[in-house]
Image (tube, rainbow, N blue to C red; front, side, top):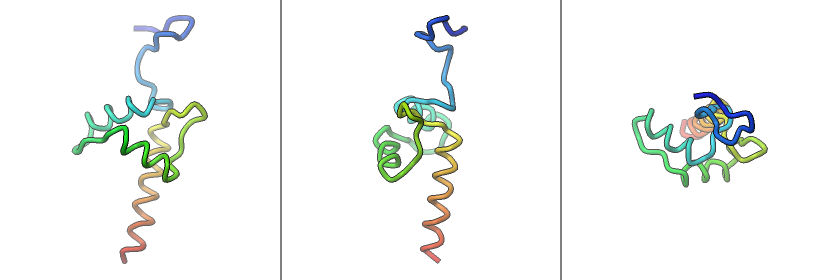
Length: 77
């Protein structure tokens, strides 16, 4: 299914610009544990990067999560 010329009906999910609710659904579907919209919103409040329109770039979000886990791991040791 293609995108309409006015972009009112996107063809599918864009991993570079996912609304938070869609990101939560996708991450829950592909992961081993549920991910809620509230969990992602808490990450955003803690500094997770977002696009200017509030959507998530999944690669940037994943990099932020890895960086955060690394920093927290440094404090544990």
